[in-house]
Every structure is written in C-alpha cells, then in structure tokens.
Length: 454
Image (cartoon, rainbow, N blue to C red):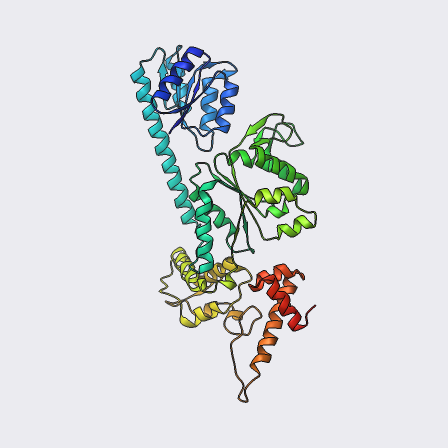
C-alpha cells in the first residue's frame, strides 16, 4: 500500500483529499503547515507528497525541496489556487512531478496520483538495481561454500528482513562489512547503506559525525550539518569497530536506538530517524563490559542477534573456491589471460594459516596475478614464505625420519605449540584462545591441565 502525505492549510481540502485517497486504497497522513510536514517526511516512509503552494511557516516549494533531498525521495505534486506560469516552471525545475491548479477534477487528481506513484516505484527500482550492481562490481559479496559459512548465510537470510540490530563479530579481514552490506541488500530497506569506522574518527568529532551539528555549535561549525543517522534515513547504518566508540557517547547512541530520535550537537530539536543498526567488532565486547570500557545496556541493545564470521584457517575448504574467485576478478582487471591455478600453487595457498583472513588471501592473489607471466598462476608468483620455506604462518608438512618417530610425542609437542600460540595471541585470555582453536572452554581447560600449562 502506497503512503501519501497531504499538506494544505485548508481543512476542507485536507479532509477531501484524505477521504478520496483512502477510498482509492492508499495510506494517508495530512499536515497543515510546513514545519509539521517536514517532521512527517523525516520520520515517515512516503511514496508521494501532495502539497499546496501557500502554507503557513513556508511554502510548498520548501516542502518540495525537503522531499527531494530525502535519501529515498517520494514524488511531489504541487497544487494551488494561485497558479501562474512562473510558479509552475519553478516547481517543475525543482523536481515536482506535476503542478495542478485548483479547482481540479477528481479524475484529474486520480490520474496524476497514479502516474506519480508509478514513477516513484520505477525510480526506486532503478536505484536498487544500481546499488546491487555497484555492490557486485566492487566484489561486495561475502563468499564461502564451507558448512560454517553456509550456516552464517542461513542465519543472515533469516535475520535480514526483521529489522533487528545485528552485531557482526569476527577477526580483521573476515568480511564483516560485506556481511553488513548483504544484510542491508536482503532487508529490502529503501534508504542507503552508510558505513563509519568508529576507530578512524577523532574522538572530538565523533558526536558531530554521528548526530550532526547546528551552525555555531562549536568553532568551525559554519553551517548546519546532518549526521550519519540522518544520512542513513530508511536505510542501514553500519558501525564498524563499535568497541572503539568513546564511553561518553555510548548513552547518546543507546538513546537514539531506543527512541528512534537524534539531536544535533548544539540543537534543541529532536529529529525522528528510521535506521537499522548493524555493528561490527573484533573485540570481545563482553570482556569490555566487564572491564568497564563498554556499557552493558548498549551491548545488549546492539547484540540482539550475533553473527560470528569464522576465520579462514578453520574453513580451509573455502580457500580453493575463494582463490579461483579472486583469480578471475584480478585477471579481468589486469587483462591477464590466466586459465587457472597450478596444483602446487593451490597446495601452497591451502597450507597457509592466513592471520589476515580473506583479505590476506585476496591480496596474495592480486599480487600473484600482477606478477604472473605465464598462462597459469604459478607458485613462483607467490611470496617466498608460501613457496615452502617452513614459515611460521604455514602448516607443517609431514616428514618421517628413517628410524621412525614417536607419533604421540610429536602430536603432544604440536598441540602444545598451538595452545601456547593461541594464549600468546590472546594475551592469556583462555575463552578467546579456545575460540581460536575451535574448542570449547571446558575442552581447552582439560588440555591445559594435561599439558601442564597454568
């Protein structure tokens, strides 16, 4: 059902249009002045605005400009009893779909409304198509055939249409932003996907970046500026590295999530926002809460649904699939007629540990394609540490000495090496170390006791 906003200071006209449009099957809201119309547009999901030219507190052209500046703009039909050629031209120049002079016939407004709604639907369909093409063209799909990734995809598809807040958790390079983009694409939300890295913005500017500011609110604030919440209206706001958000700003973010309203820095007016929040972190936010660095209430508000992206080293079956995908991408980009990946090259890629996850694999393939001179991706195009030098980042290749070996002893030594490395990498955090090793906390504790590690 299409939603229409009627703006007219004459009560009889508002009532006539509201009754008529509801009988036609549309959802209708009405306002009598410019200020309330702008508020309704900021907080509503509108398909069409019908506005009188002369209204208290502004004009129909103000309403028109505000409507056309929305992230997902509705069409606008301007009506007036004081029509001139100049005002008609001005309205059309500023983006009005049509200009109707009072008194108008019912059939005339009926046809105009239907055609305007068709144009709104077509414009939105085109924008969505362009957005999907841009995502696909940027390699904006998270890929994987392993059971772990298929589980992620199933949960993602179930959660996407619901609108709940989602916390994407995973190591750097696993593709957390790609997951957030896919959530947005599958959600059907009409507004934009807006991403911000909370660790990349200076603490003093973060509040203005998220919530906007009004002119004169601080030195350098030369004009009003909308924040990212407003820019993401009707869409998705992705808060990457949300664990880096300053503690003093966390209550304001929590309030925006709970009430659906933001207030610009230095401003008094609350602005209604319809924004889906997806956040991401590579930190253990539960531990951050216990250490007093992250608010517990905000953590639970962000973590309504958690999506954990597994690291590449525990879904090794995805490595050949991803490697061929990146090969095709960069061979096309660099104009290299490469037919595939040599078996020894693929073996070297599968033997690497990938501390940088999928991002590291992509960078390796990009480098190899750029250096390759043959018709197939060869091991010579890989970095030296991947070509079989016993690098720390590569898996151990079995070699049995002539006199045999103590397999149990070798396995105990190897197990201890991996447990020590997991504890070193996590700073002694056993819960996090268990996750890195793909073990439950109870199993890790048992193995620590067996190995005599305190």
